[in-house]
Length: 102
Image 1 (spheres, rainbow, N blue to C red):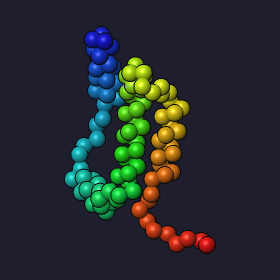
Image 2 (image 1 turned 60 degrees about the horizontal axis):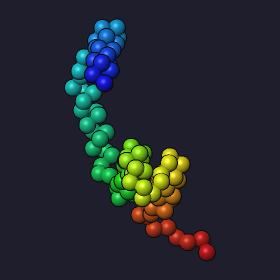
Image 3 (image 1 turned 45 degrees about the vertical axis):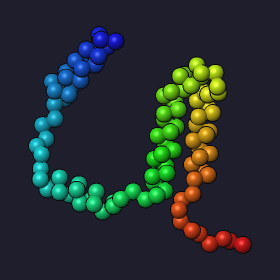
Image 4 (image 1 turned 120 degrees about the horizontal axis):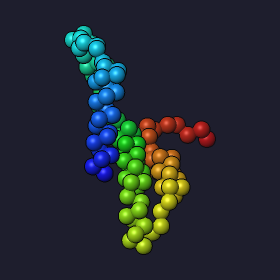
C-alpha cells in the first residue's frame, strides 16, 4: 500500500507537472461566467435531491457489500444492488402533478 501511494503521487507529478503541464492562466471573466451559470441553475429541486440520495445509497451499498455479507443477515451482490437502485428511481415521485389520461 505505501509503495502504491508513492507511485501514484509520483505518476501524478510526472504526468501533470512535467510531461503535460497546464499553462493556462486564470481569467476573471471566465470565473464570473461560471459563477453566473451556477446562479442560473438555482437550488436543487426536491426530485434532484431524491435522485442524489438514491445514488449515494446505491454507491454506499456497493462499497460496503462485503461488510454486510459478513454479518450473514442478507446476501447482496451487484445485481441485487443495481436492481434495488433502479426500482427506487422508478418508484420515486418527481414531485410534479400531472393530469391523468383517463
